[in-house]
Length: 107
Length: 118
Image (cartoon, rainbow over all chains, first blue to last red):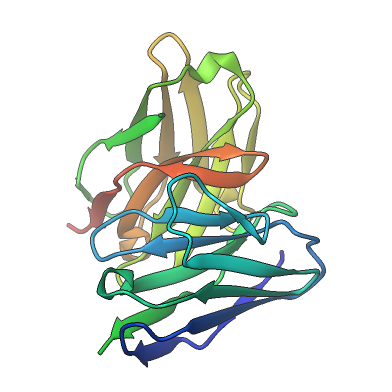
């Protein structure tokens, strides 16, 4: 199975800051990498699909890039409501897998 | 917009079978084009994909759970179900049902906590 490794595991940031979260795949997955946001006691919400495509209704401050094995989620001008855990997910091969998560704390 | 809702017992005894049902609204399972899946999240931990079913009944299970998992579909009720046998405390988790488009999980249910305890 494909292993996804996110970094960092935790980040504490201030509002309006720019945040970058990375996801590395154990083998090439093309652009079949997606990003989710999960707030406490909620289910994950899709933010970015196929590495760089914004999902419907997602604020424009969220963007994604990358291909092959290395991917990045960028949050521009961070807002307090962005405090959450972020997960990457690959749909290149079964079983589908997720990264371990990156918890974002807003100072 | 499709909505998914999990239902089932919140407490299961060790060695018994965990059974959950997902009711889909805002879209028909039998229309095809999507896979219907189960995903779990251990308390405070990451996400583990359990498996999926297509409206035709074809399934794929995560090899790590394959020997204990059965996913079935009832298109007449627009529902699909999960059975996980021989549960232990390690199966305590929030269980989500979800929709997959070409294996991309795009919509999730709200999740239901299942605790395995005597």
